[in-house]
Length: 414
Image 1 (cartoon, rainbow, N blue to C red):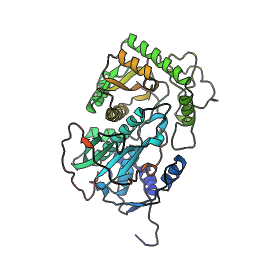
Image 2: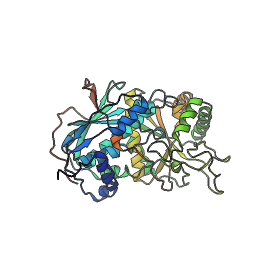
Image 3: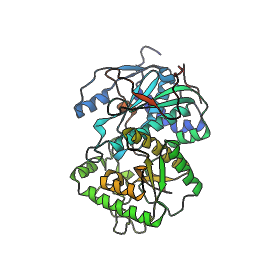
């Protein structure tokens, strides 16, 4: 590189390469940038000042060979991780890049204490980001191992290590490509029934990640869940802390986090049987005649066999595999989060389903019209710069026996 030229920043590469990632994933072309990239955490420092965290005046260099990836490939896989869903699009994750791993951390500053006091949904979101990260690496032709940390109260939640190379399967490519198309759809769904083979694939997706997916098919169960969901929504409206967080994080049309008004569903109406929450601005015009939500949406409950903090991370990975599998099938989904966020509602739901499993996520599933994706912060805002080495308390996930990670000069081209 000419010494008179300015070195590109990670943000420069991210902006240019991530815009290309959608089309490149479909064509199978590789991403290649060979210059070293200096990460200057100025955005992170500004966030630290706003949140009361100490300012870190430091830089570090992402080598083209870190983790066997070029900087552009690193930008792509971390950009994919950031496309995970999260409560009110708070994006509560941070990523640490090492020479032989990428770790996922919980960003405590982005956990909402009124809505998510024990961090359940934040950890589920980090699990979804972890799955996207894994899927993007596999799509690059890498074999990876996920190690979930046992002491998740401090330090990283999990880390991904490269163990080899392998050609991605067709299903791997489909899931990786679906990352960029998936978006929460809060608009009405059609009354077209989802084929049984698609429902089987959704259930198998949850099972692959060690979770369960239960469909509320019986009319009596469906009706009871609807009553419980609407009651939980009313409970939240009477909670000042919840209402304050909801107001602060919705209708955000000029930020890279929160829920923009373009992601809202229809304005509520008296004829609605389900309280699906209004993510739009309060002064929106009433809905047009003839537009209404489906009366009997397909409801699916994702559960895990216990409710440990690590199980919530597993639930997030299962959730994202389910959502991406749904996207591959052309199926949309939105969340009935009040059934999980209100403790009495979650307990009642567990009893209805005769659990365990423990309910972790409730989805509304169906065929909907395309919706625009919600914005995301650049991954450079989500980088974790460790203060020092921490004791390794990670355990290999089931099905991944311990092995020594193998170094790579560079990732294979696709």
